[in-house]
Image: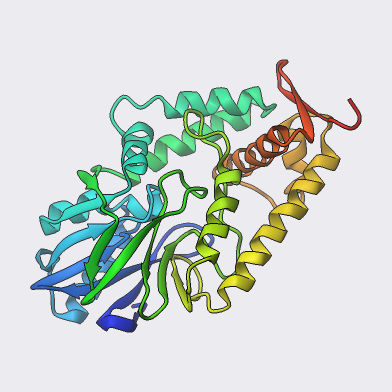
Length: 322
């Protein structure tokens, strides 16, 4: 069992996920006559069993959870939330943008699998890989059901006996939020700032096409808060907050410059193959790789550094050479 006591009588709980990062860190805090939960995990057996162990360890049941807050809609954070909400009878709150995304991506009649396949094909992905991406998305949809019933989150919430500001930090997802406790300088950061890896910044077919601009703006926004510690959803807490923000911005600056140099009559897929040549990617990882490369290319195009040529497939040219 992966559980650690933290400030305000809270618990940091590692819930397993079947992905390379191994765990998503969720949080429990006492509030009034029960508990507040922040993020829940993916709906699969190991995660459900992990929560059952946690409840037994703490001497509580799901019915002691009266409120659930989600930092964002991605399935490793929200996938188990509908199940948990049913078990607990809890109210669930999240940013309205991401509440719509849960339904749009995973809800009944969703067209996201078709739209994602169309998008990656437009960007030069071979048909067989596009089929693999679609198949994985369809399988993953089973790990997010039932969907939660979400209410809009307010600007200020309370748990652990403290008031927390809800900060909208779009980028990793369009409706991503963090929770800031000003007196102690504690941020519960979701996937906004991670200690060891750079959060994936990806384009979805019918969502914001400029998530990287939004992400960098959100990093600068967060840097203005007096944060001493970030409890992130993956890996260890972040202590050197502004230094880590500078590292993330520098990483994207360097990545953008490299992609700009590669944009020489190439498709997104051709560029992504170079960017990720050091790794063997499965279809799930290829979806992230393509969508993240598109996000960087969209940034460069918006800045006038490259030109998109709308042919089939789309190709990009460095503006200085075109």
